[in-house]
Each structure stands twice: as C-alpha cells, then as structure tokens.
Amino acid sequence: MECPANLRYTKEHEWARQEGHRIVVGITDYAQKELGDVVFVELPDVGATFASSDILGVVESVKAVSDLYAPVSGTVVETNLVLEDQPELINASPYGQGWVAVIEASDSSQWQDLLTAAEYQAYVAQEQSSH
Image 1 (cartoon, rainbow, N blue to C red):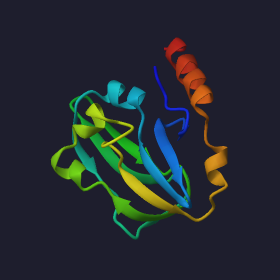
Image 2 (image 1 turned 45 degrees about the vertical axis):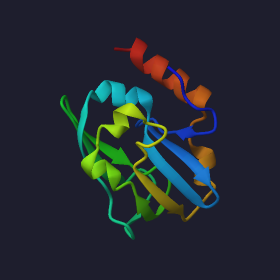
Image 3 (image 1 turned 90 degrees about the horizontal axis):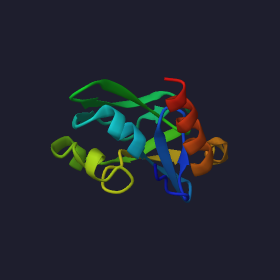
C-alpha cells in the first residue's frame, strides 16, 4: 500500500494535504479499495464549519455507505464539484482528481496531530491483521 509521504492521515482513512492554512481532504487509496466502486459523493456545503472529526460528507459505493470526517477544524472553502458527475474519480485518482474538499483550518497545528504516512501504513497493517 503506497501512501504519499507529503500527506497526513486519519484513522478513519482520510488524507490531508497542507497548502498554507488550507487543508485539501480526500479518502485514501486503502479506503477506496475497501469501498469498491464509488457511485455517489455527498459533498459538504461551502461555508460550512466543522470541528475535527465531525462528519464532513458521505461516500456511497456499490458495497457500503461511509461517512467522511473532517481531519481538522475549519470552514469549507471549496468542494470538488466534478465528483457529483464523476464519483469514480475517487477510485481512479484518490490522491489527485478525487479530492473532496478544501478546509480553511481554524487551527493549523491540528495538521501535525494527524498520522504520518509511516504511522498510517502501520495502523492499516495492524487493522488488517486483526481481521
């Protein structure tokens, strides 16, 4: 399982990329593989404010419905509207075109509290071995 080293991760399988005070959010390659073919994405509203770990949106696949969680506290400043017509981009490009939202972080230090790529990979390996 490959995880880009420049990203941070949550135990709920979201990734976060820091761009100044903004955090781009998506779901990990591992999560999209577990979900299967994504058929619908419920995006958060631009202007909506979330606390870290709040439900940000929903991803529906052929197998399951899964909540998306905010990795940091802040306000949504942009959403990936392309996903409304092409939700499969989450499967095809989870770390690229399949991003979900951009959050203007209210506390940018929260990014440091997220898992590094190595920590996330260890977490997933531990999770898989316990199944």
